[in-house]
Image (cartoon, rainbow, N blue to C red; front, side, top):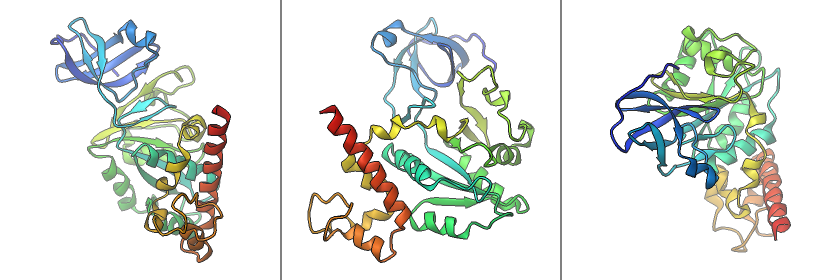
Length: 297
C-alpha cells in the first residue's frame, strides 16, 4: 500500500490499515501516512492494532488509541464487524470442534460470524449447512457455477470491516479471486498482494475489497488457543445462539449446562433440538475455562 507525507492537523483521527515492524499506515481524512507510535505505549504494554482508530500529532505520531469495540489477539485486528469462517464440504473435511471454538470467540467479542461453505459441487454439505443454520449462524454456500452465490458473499463485505479465515485448502484464494478477479491470487499459496508472502509474515493489513475492508489471515492455526482461554466460563453458554431460548428454564439458577438434572439445555440435546456436536464443543470450552481459573487461583 502506497503512503505519502500529508499535512496532519493537531489530534487528527484516522484508522490503522497496516502494521509492519513498528510502522503503521494510517488512513485519515487528509490522506494516508506512515507513522510510529509514542514510546509510552510500549512502556504501558499497549500495542496499536490494525483497525484501531487513533489520534495523530502534527508530527505524524500516534498519540492516542480510541476505545475498541472488539479485538482479536492473533492476528492483531481491532474493530471488526464480522468474520468469515471458510470451510470446505470435503477435502479437507471441517473440524467442527475447532470451528465451534472460533465461532464462540467471535460471539464473545460481539463480532458477527458468517460461515462460508466451499466445494459444494463435490459435496452438497446439506447436513453441515443445516447444523449451523439451526445453531443461528449465517451460512453462505458457494458454487462457482452460480454467480449469485459469489455475489452473496461480496454483498456482505460492502461497508464493513471483515476478516476471512480458514484452514489451508478450503478455497479462500479461489473465493477471493471470484469476488475480486484483479487480485489474481495463486491458488494454494499465500500472496504478497495481501501482505502475506513468505518474507512478510509480520505484516497485518486491511485492504479495500468489494466496498469494504478485509483482513486476510493464513488459517485457523493463527486464531490461537489463547483467545478462548480468556473466556469466562459463565459467559460461554451465551456464545452459542441456539442455547438462548432455554436460559432461565433450568432447575438450578447456577446450572453449568453440562450434565445437571433439570438442565433445559441438556434436555434439548436429548430431544435433538440442539446438536450434540455443538453441546460437546460447549463442554470442551467450559472445561478449559474452568481449569484455567482453578489454576490461576
